[in-house]
Amino acid sequence: MKTVKVSLGVMAMAFAVISTSCKNNEKNSNTTIEDAATERAVPMEENRMESSNAAQTDASLTTYLELKNALVNDDQEAAAKAGEKMVGQLKTFKTENYEQNDQQELQDIIEDATEHAEHIAESPIGHQREHFDILSKDMIDLIDIVGTSQKLYQAYCPMYNNNKGAQWLSVTKEIKNPYYGSKMMDCGEVQREIN
Amino acid sequence: MKTIKIIALVFLVVLVGIQFVPTNRNQSEVVPKSDFMLVNNVPKDVQDKLKVSCYDCHSNNTEYPWYNRIQPVAWFLENHIREGKSELNFNEWGELSDRRKNSKLRSIISQIEDDEMPLDSYTFIHWDAKFSELEKKEIIKYMTQLKNSL
Image 1 (cartoon, rainbow over the protein chains, first blue to last red):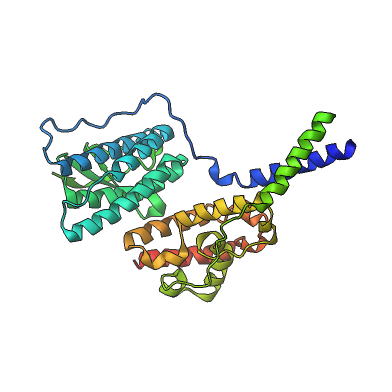
Image 2: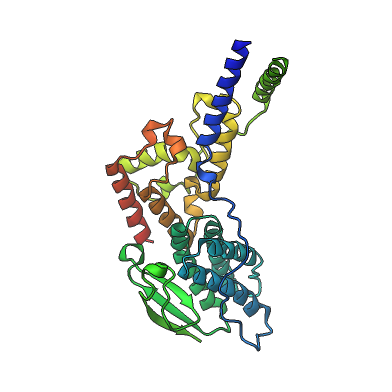
């Protein structure tokens, strides 16, 4: 009897060791989000353009702005939720109405942006900000091709990423830094106005 | 006591049974032209380290340890490798656009800087996969240089 018990114990331990050693990379996977206290981005223009092209950019842009606001507020959960939403929106982005050259560039941007949004959906806030940096570049390039009906400001924080600097998009001129949040809310400057 | 016996027996049968489940081995003889080492001019020491520390899960060819013959270990490894390759496959480097390369390099650099890669569960067994401070510095330096040259 004793041997049975002992061997059972050994087996159980072996299983425990194996399963814990492989859990490392799974820990952040499903962040559950309750109510959405997310600050809404500025509502879209009343007379929204009829074109579905502009509409599909506006949808992901609105979510991008939600994400930006979440990071300004140091809110990991809201950022993760916005990231997840963005993944879905980017997946349905249609590129066939554009010229051949633009199509390829757009697919590239969307593929890249989707990956960053996926990571934002399941990462701690430090990583979310790293991915937001590249996602912002993708969004800026996307808007350069597709355009938008929104008035936007392209802002720049020279300190982020070891002083390499990072950009972001905002609907207000006032600087609210998504890379540092409450630590350094007003670090940055407006580089460019879009529309 | 009887129930313990039955449980142990069931457990044993399952454990033996799963040994017969086939696994997909991640092995390939060919190194495609798009491989990171062939597309880039990588210094020898960086090459060697990347192959030992990264290629098992981030390429099409894994050098399997003996215990990969045992289930459920093989399943865990298979899962790791699948995930690893979906994030980054060094064999397919040349197929990525500059935008994608830039993103990947950014992640490579930050993961190595923060000691998140190679995974602890991997270096726990693969001692040689660990980065020394010097190796870390060299790899980050090379990857940064590559990123800036895009």
